[in-house]
Image (cartoon, rainbow, N blue to C red):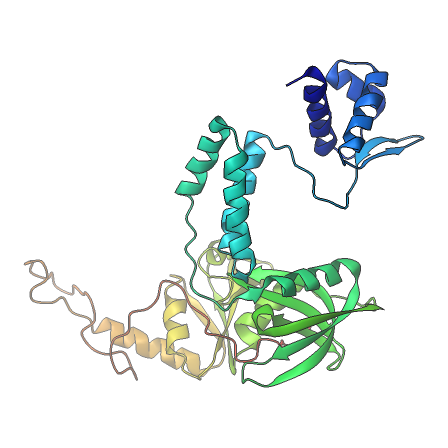
Amino acid sequence: MSDVTKRALRLLALLQSRTVWSGPELAAEMAVTTRTVRRDVDRLREMGYPVLTSAGHGGGYQLGAGRELPPLLLSAQEAVAVAVGLRLTAASGLEGLDAEALRALAALDRLLPPTVRSEVSAVTDALGVVARPVPAARAEVLIALATAVRDGLRVRIDYEKGDGERGERRLEPRRVLAVDGRWYLFAWDLGREDWRTFRLDRMQAVHPSTFAITPRATPDIERTVRESITVGAYTRAVTVRIRRPLHEVEKLVPVRAATVTADGADDDACIVRAGSGNGDLRWVAMHLIGLGAPIEVIEPPELLTVLQDLSTWAGRATLAPDAAGKSPAPGATASATAEPPGAPGAPEAPEAPEAPEAPEAPEAPEAR
């Protein structure tokens, strides 16, 4: 490789690493004159790289966006980061992008030098993504919504609700979020005049408009979406106070299972809210017990009875006669042989509360 080519590639790498460079700064980095920098900039332009020039204070050279995608120069660490990002994208639940991500990962592998390829291969081979199956959102839907959010424009969507009813909604999109492998849109619904949360996998089509969104007060988006998913989508809400610090409980509760918020100025307690779709409070109660802290029921009052019944049932557990050949000590207990109250058989509680598919996730509760 000639010195001129090496210098051009070095200049391209510098322009990619920072927004604006002055001529003297580039000359100092490359150990050449500013005249040589100007000649190398002209070579990059001839190769199709849009190097822009601005005059005055704070001006200099910067790499602009071109009509075609030029080759990118990546360091070893950047190549690893891109490879990890592509691997995660392949398991993101976005229909169409998974295959594209794998093709891009294969193309990246072909272009890397041996030393960098081995490092990238070590990371990607060791990286596994275990995700439960969720309905896939289409890549074109995500891109159209993300663009509308960026440009501040209204959209129309063809939307299918949980009961199969389809219709058109006119929205002012504010944020696209990924929550536990599923994609959501938080938007102002112009027809219902309220904030709503929509699942991208239920969108059949997105039609961008040229109408700008109306500025309005926006609630805490992440908190509102989580409330919509975990509580607003269900027929019954459960609210309890857990006598354990917020930061400890947050680690135990999946984002799609419940909301966890501070309990005023009490640092030793927090508020947990969850939903129950079929009115059966036993599963909610069992998961609350799994948090391993005192529980104070706020609503509904009958949850207290369910918790007490479960406590009584668990207290009747006994050590099996063939338990590893050991004689039980007085008062020893083990796995319950009796069925829990109201259950056809002793259920095996999952590792974390798992919210079923929201029957009407778009209909989020009103912003508070």
